[in-house]
Image 1 (tube, rainbow, N blue to C red):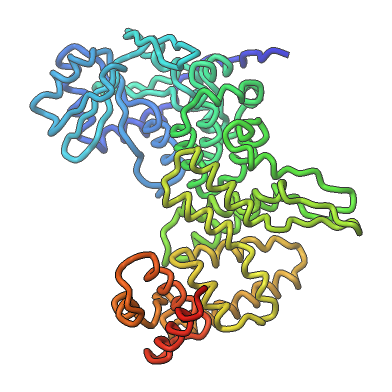
Image 2 (image 1 turned 45 degrees about the vertical axis):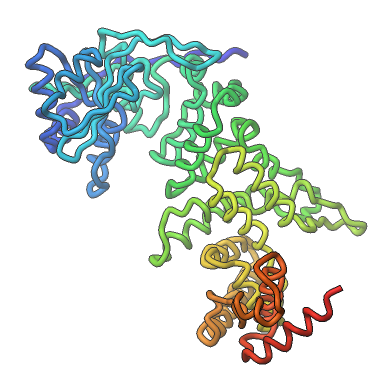
Length: 494
């Protein structure tokens, strides 16, 4: 069945209290008032628009929620006229977006983006707009992605609020709609479907049925979007305080199938005897719990993209490793190894930085290591190995492992928590005695070369790694003990 455009309510007058709220936003910024005056004196109009208006209205309903973000302005002045009006007033301007009508400026530390009214049409193959200047504020607002971003407030003396598509009502109802038909909006720019996902997490909005239907039927269009833009929106979604509902929309509409199919694949069929838990629901719960631990730890930065990606993706090796055993059980042997490889491949394709890719992959690889600890059977050398392999990711590994416990069996959950407490206590004791965070061989490179009579080269590295493994296995050694062990190892090499 074809997607039907949503029925639009007639625009309602903006209540006086709302007018006053947004006027107060403008008056808080002398820069905006001065900008409006400069444009008005030259015969042009200027309007604060988009997210800054939306966020001001949200802040009005949530006292103490903080200042609004970037200041976006739209105007009927052409880009070259805007640049002329800014000359001598803005401390700096930039025109990297001038082909699309946008001029950037900084005035007394405030950054502005000023864009000429647009009346574009999109080339739906390349997604590039055929840039055309507009003359109508309402027509410009009609191009916006969602109604909550299609509100404007005049920077002229009247400070009139313009809301032609019912964005205020949608904001109050926590509803996500497009100014026109959702299919047209998403065909113009399929990234808007991912923006819808983000706004579920960021603003707590619920998409209308026509938005969800269009996202589902058009999810394949997301393949037209560059990986960099996809990654940016996905990361922004994950960095919100509660991204679970957004991720459920991401997977449920099929968007994940296109850009992160490993997440969708976690929705494995559960056998009638429930021999394994729902891995998809488990992964979302792990993410919820990891965020709770992250926020509760004042010693680490929050939000933490690496931890959140690892929590979401730590089990993506399970679908490829699931095996049905002879007696009806289910196993996922080495899913952490497979998962680490899948994480590295997918995050690289999404153009995440090398540091993020390696960190999330390593956490995925290590997340099962703790389960070999049993009731504390690990030797000190095994504890040293755990700390060394975790490296600077150890605080995140602690949170990931604790979050990975989603059992409803309270006794089992308490036992796992107490066992991990015991492991952390052992790590603390060993760290205080041996400085585990800085484990190094007991001999340096110069002494290795002197003792073995060799020069710089790969053999020095091999000897160094042997001594480091020895240090992890046996703890700190006296120099003469380390020297004897090195010579024995060297003599025994085939």
